Length: 111
Image (cartoon, rainbow, N blue to C red):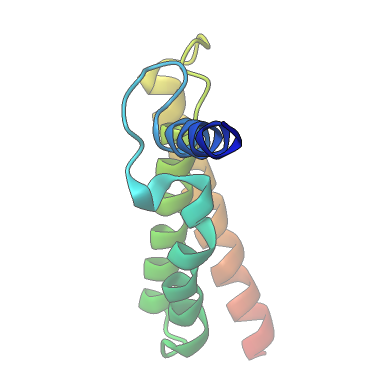
């Protein structure tokens, strides 16, 4: 019946967004693409409302890059040839660059 077909399609959609196609593991809710916006709201508030100190700048850039790396890792192409070392290096470079740019902009704006 059309109702059963609709229910099956809804179930397929739920499963395809919750289970990684390569690994078959459940993707935690916070790391699904559908959760990107609600998870970034508190991060954005941290960027905007935390006192503009170097510590807060470093902390919120680190939080943001860590969340982005975790989201990208959970939704990765698991059949690719990337190693854990490649992923760790990418995370380190992205985090360092984000913190460096943010601190550089803070210094330029303070003048």
